[in-house]
Amino acid sequence: MRLYDKCSGDISLAGAFASYYWAKNKPKDVPSFPVLRAFGRAIRYNLGSLAFGSLIIAVIKIIRVILDYLDKKLATTKSDVLKVILTAFKCCFWCMEVFFKFLTKNAFIMMAIYGKNFFTSAKDSFLLLVRNCVRAAVVNQVAGILLFLGKALITLGMGSYFVADLFFDVYEMAVDTTFICFLEDSEQNDGSPEKPFYMSKNLQNILDKKNMK
Image (tube, rainbow, N blue to C red):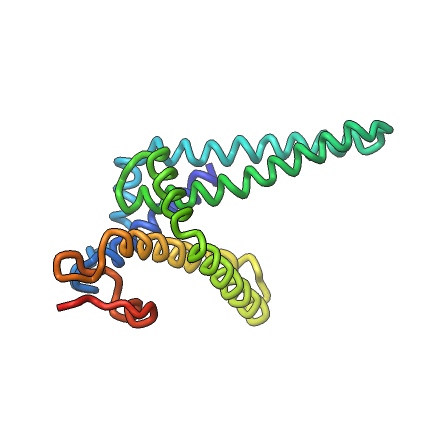
């Protein structure tokens, strides 16, 4: 349930940030109460996809807990083969959890933008990032470093990493959603009068892009 709540929170935040990005005249065209509206859309149209995405992560987590339990039970065994096999399984499922968390998060962002089902959203977001793998790698590294430094500074000031982590989860979702929207915007539009960019003026200046009049 806690994992499902986090996923519904993620898609609500993604929907709010996406509604701002795709508003043509900012902030006039941004709908009122964007988070509540995004949450309502998610519950109405994507409830099953939310549950399925949460279930995938939950199943992998359960398997990892079982493997940790077996690892403790086999700690005194003399069979090196069993230890190697168990370690390999633990490594594989750790990688699977990291990958599916990444895939699910981006799928939820695409669901918030287009309202499609989980599988279609996961495929579209994955292919979008593959086509822009260099940009994705750079943004993930830079954003990761900045968010970590921000958490560290807040921890020093407030003495609580947990509070800082919760606080910066919102910023992390904002960065990820804006990046996905930017990639979609860049692929669909070219700045011409017929296909203007939806990104804000500030973002256009940062990325050296502009709409032609």
